[in-house]
Image (tube, rainbow, N blue to C red; front, side, top):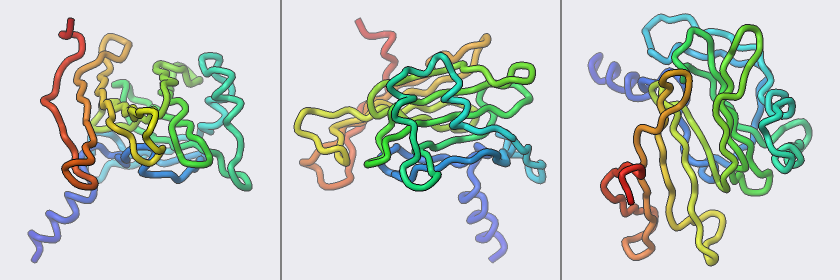
Length: 206
């Protein structure tokens, strides 16, 4: 009984020390936090969480690297809730807590842009930005995982034809692509089933 409980706890906490989420379409729950407690990404037992006093919305609005179109769409959806999902953790290898911010649409939670902020001195600097359509990023075991939904002209927003999943790792003061895989969603194999090709590196393609 004790072993079973221990296995259950291990599966629920994971190894990243931060909450790992799926695509923006799957979440569809805009949120914002002006401060958050982030557990060390090493996932050490008994480690005290670090409190980050930062407003993700303000980071994006004050960021000159964010496009005018994304900033124009960054408005409360209802009341004071902004269409923002944020992750706090260690993704750039430093001692400080990094912030990953996803800006979404209010109507259907589709990603408009994703950004990574690293604490440099007393300020947070943008060290990664992607404003591709339907982009969404999370932290997974210290890596940055960026998902991009792929659509055809006939696809509804809730049913993309495929998605590209790219894993980046912080190396030599910048993010370097480590892995890339395209997941194709096939309507012929049944609902919610995936056709997943062998993982490839796009840099090796001609």
